Length: 215
Image (cartoon, rainbow, N blue to C red):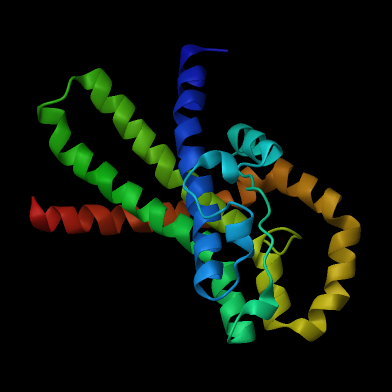
């Protein structure tokens, strides 16, 4: 186990915490705004990472790059506009990760362009790596969360958009979810890395394109 490996894992920890907080808080906040006070009663309307971390999900994302937060209970009957509000709550978490991923990429671009002139190279590289980790992990979580597996946003979105077909497919997903999850863990970094990589490349081009107009 080399120094670079340990450094990468150390830098990944704050990135994971930021991603988990963004995901958990965003979903709780949107649900609360739309009339469901369940997240408030569960103590999820907070930026404290401890309220949103699922230990196994944290370990998985640290090891393989994909994981999950603590499940958030919601009460769809509390929403004023039913399905529309349910979809908003479902998508709040992955979209929050996507937004944080872009912001981190933009800040990384700003750092890369300006800080090298005034910051020691060691500090410059570490901060740059930390910002890249924040962007990459948030984008990875966005992609992973759209998989239609129980507990993920993709599963809930499928339920809301196709209720008739959902219950037919849900039985199969519940029955084989452990095998599917193992497959995702083993192959996820190869399969899910494709859409994640495309988003990262797009965000990088946009961020550096904007910064290129400024500097």
